[in-house]
Structures are given as C-alpha cells and as structure tokens.
Image (cartoon, rainbow, N blue to C red):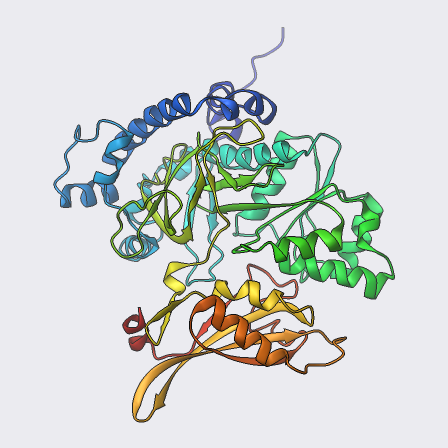
Length: 486
C-alpha cells in the first residue's frame, strides 16, 4: 500500500491563497478584456463601492489608519459608500516614513503581525528612491499576483499574445516595475520574458545582440534608455533597431503633453509606444489602450482621485492636481487615500473608442513636491520636457539645478537647466537662446540654460542605462530654505 504523503509545516506559496477565487474576483487578461473592462460605468461604480467598503473594514483593524481616522472624529460605521471617501484623511509618503521610523522596519502602517512572516510567504519591494529614501512595501501572495495581473491585462489589451518575446532591460531588484513586467509575461500571458537587467547589468551592445538572437518583439523600459538602445544599434552594431520588427513598446512617457517624446521613440523603433503609470504600492494603475487617447485607470483594482495640491479638495474634471489612490486588493498594508503627490488630471469619463468605460487620465505631469517657486511662479522640472525635445540638436536629456543666490543683498532661488547636446550636432548656434525662450514660454518664468556634451549627465541625471528612473531636479539649496519656496 502506498503511504500517505507527509504533510509539510512550511509556508508553501501555492497554499497561501485560493487561486480560483482570486481569479474569479480579478479576471485573467482575456476574460477581463471582454467583461469588466467593457462594463457600463454604473456597474463599475457598484463594484468599486463594494470593494471600497470592504477595504475600509480592513483599515479599521490597522493601527495606522485607526489612529488617523479617530483623529478627525470618525468611528466605524461612519463610511457608508464610495461617496464618503472624502471624509477619510489622505496621507503621504512622509506619514509612511514616520511610521516606519517609529516602529522599524515595517511600522504600524503595514499592520504586520510579527508571526505572519513565518506563516505566509512575503515579498518586499521598494520605490525607486528618486525622491528620497526608498519606501518599503510588503506583498502577501494574493497582492503579489494581482499586481502582476494588472500589468498582464494592460499588455493584452495593447496586443501582446502568447509566443511573443518581451525584453525587460530593467533589473529585477527591490524596484517593482521589472518584477511586474516579468511576472505579467511569464505567469499570465505565455510570453517569454528576457530579464536582461539595466545597461549596468547587461551592456547596451549585449542587450541588442540578445534581442536579435532571441527575436525580441516587445520591450518595456524607460524612454531614456530606449532612445539610447536605438542609437547604439546604429553606432555599435551598424544595424537599424527597426529590423527587430518590434510590435510595440511599453514605457513611462511622463509629461509628454505635446507628443514629442512618443514621436521620437516611434520614429526610432518603427512601432506604437504605449504609456503607463503606477507605483510600487498601487501596481499598474493606468495604461493606454490602442486608441492612445488617455491612460485608462485599472478601475477594478484601484480608485483614483485628483485633489487640489494646496487644499486637498477634489478638483473639477479636467483640472490638474495630486493623484490620490485607494487600492482594493492590498491588505498588507492597506492603501486608502494615499496622496501620491504625482500630478495628473482626468481627461474623460466617456466611453473610449476601444469600448471601455474606464476613466482616462492624462500623462503623468510631474511631482508636486518637486515644485520650485521662482519669482512667484510655480515651476515643475518635468515641464521642461517639451522644450528640450523641441530642438533635434539635444539628446533629450536634462536636469534642473536649483540654488539660492544673493541678488542685491536679497536671497532668491534660481534655476539652471542643463541640457545635453548631441555630439553630431553641426552647430550650437542659437540653441541656448532658443531653449531659454521656449522654456520661458512654457513655464512663465525665465531660467538659464547650460549646454553640456552628450553623456555629461549620465551620473548627475541618472541616465544612460543606469538603474532607476532619470533624475530631473538637483536641489542645492540649504535644506532649511527649501520649504520656504513652496
């Protein structure tokens, strides 16, 4: 007789949650594309309402939220529907950092039972750290799967299919984006992921050789590195990157409001480019469909609001403000009215040409906490993108350097925009003056432009295939002065 298999006492990943139940709640990409994605707006709202009330119950069991909600006079039972969401106080990364520092390493924000790690497989990811110390976020198995599923859904709607090959020149480290792309392809779409890592892990030349060898036809990376790859393909391999016949590129265009960055990428790669938005806490929160008429919020996994930067009150449709996220699938930690301090605006709540009623947002418009006040004008470093891209003699790379100077004995803040010039530019004549005029028109205040050689900003701006996102602001003012300009 066969003996019964001994039962393990280890916290095995596949036993940590009910897979079938999770997939019924959050449908797989092809099912999602024909069901929830096409539901009428009212039905989507009803689903959001139910999931919101459920996550509020989780919040009341969490010391971080309970403390904050009691402080504004709320009690369990005071929140009756999604319409009441504005009664809940939002929080920022500063509040999260305070929680983590007060009770390291996870803080009361996570609500982590000390014994939980021994009973449940957990995954630790962090933000990129471009705006300060990286924020740690834990994932339980269900959340780890759903966050990958959000990426898979977006890729499927954009046209990715089983048998495709996606190259991901982003290192699977504590940063979340490459993990999401890898798992989306491998676990949910039948797409071969080539996890080549950044240009530091795998040289740019090797990235391209790998792509041609294994017939990469999809890419996910930051736009700065995609431009570098296309240029290196010509310079180092003597080939045209369009020979890869890439089906599409998924990237993060930032405030490409005039479409210049998208046009450059599409011209170089010869394929559609799709924008995306997300953070390590909220996964793939918004994505472009093939219509490319705004980024659809992933409405069944996250509820997004836009609030005034100063007052925190909801703004009218079409107005710019801070994005505030409430995530339906996260419980460790719950994410309820998280003010991301990312600037955005809702473009439309009408039915898209793709058939979806999911609301659409504009491109990511920069960080509100990276704003600098120059002579009474609020200036956002990401607003430089259209001007820098407007002259083909630049590489498209820039960084804003802010310093406090003395003018007539009076201290004031000044910004100098460092812009890279292509090494094959025939001349620099008029370039500095032209960029300064365009920047003044775009931002409403005069700034100085410093022209630098191609590649000079690789370390300062974190470009050229280095790990993480490009850095667009270097604040050299004394720390105690920075808040006074806001």
